[in-house]
Image 1: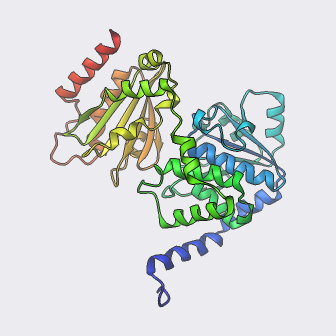
Image 2 (image 1 turned 45 degrees about the vertical axis):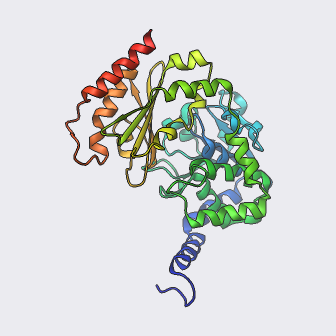
Length: 378
């Protein structure tokens, strides 16, 4: 299809995509379900981030303004730097109470945001999957499970918030007030690294422009609320974590480690490690960064990468998953075990030209790991 005379091909293609989306049978079906429902439950993944909480609040506030009875129900609380957003005080933590169980049982719709697998919902996953309500997935991760009735999913979208905006666009953009626009903007901002990652598009910026116009948001204030509130404990933890930075495979892979002792010594919460891995990814020459967070049961590994160095398959090899450039997994056993397994498997998933790819941990990496573990045991 040729672009009309005087209209750039990229602009024409984006307009064409918007028209296709607006005519999507799936979008129409989801909007229809929302319009007809009176009781709706909204949930997101454990240890929710900005996209999860922002999308949840944006949808909850939007639906309430449409006269719907909404329950936002999660396993874990919102991060401290997101508690200011409108509606956060209405998010409930699942406690199995009769009131919560009755609401879920009587709801016509359960909406799952920013995750597509039952396990990532934590304690509420089994409850939602077993309900008779219509189950709607809105998400941008790869490889969704198949128990959802309606799905608005695209793994190339910058964020769940971007997909949610498309639903609002198909329904009624005039329903976007400040209480919808502020959390939706935060969701987009946090999942795109303040709009600097490769998943940012011209279309996303057009969406943001409409949030400015319809919601009256101030980006400088929202950015400061999210990023400029650090505890002294969190800063001390960052100092400890950055001291563990090491490079592997001739500088193409960078790692940092968060031990339980670091958390104990600094008094910081594990939530304050959010964004630490990006410090490693910013090092010149690093293609992939990993942060290993020690827990009682095992080690959480977060993978971040640049460009076409996709890491979701790497995370999947350990039972995890996520985005192409941002994924995570949980490896049972010791921190040392997780570190060895992840680094040894790197050549299978990352393009490491002209490097030794035997799959064994190098002598240099083994020495680094040994010194790190010894320092934590002293």
